[in-house]
Length: 204
Image (cartoon, rainbow, N blue to C red; front, side, top):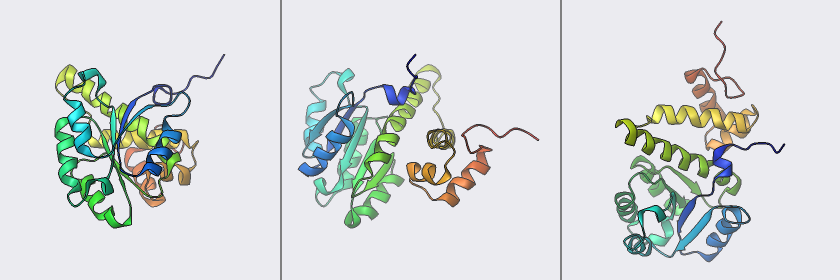
């Protein structure tokens, strides 16, 4: 019998990529869209995606948006705000470089799901992206059912558990997948009483 993979690794998602760099688009298509991968749609700028969104049926909205800051000229966060408004609940992940990292960090404070610096860590992106989407879908479903939403604290705890499980208890690898330091992940494990394998610590 074939081994069952987690839902986030089985499901194919629609990913919108806003970036003017052909090489970035090519790398993302190879990393995420090859074989039984996700469905990617590339846009040179945010205006193109926003214009198309008015013509698409709601079912065709992207599950996640990758936004390259260099594609947006001098006001990248204004496009970020427009996208967040047009696609409420859809996670936006920022692609940045050294010149725009400070802007990316501000985007994170304004609600971006994550950001990746160039050169992109494609292995981490392949791991993180489906889980960000799955958490966003879970929050939307919960909100639709009872008017509530998964708290940031609960989402952070779930992310730490998944990373530890995926890394088979390797703290360094789990921290790398989450994009945090080992000291931070140890603090989070202590905070949520999580064992190295991602399970709850047994009470003494």
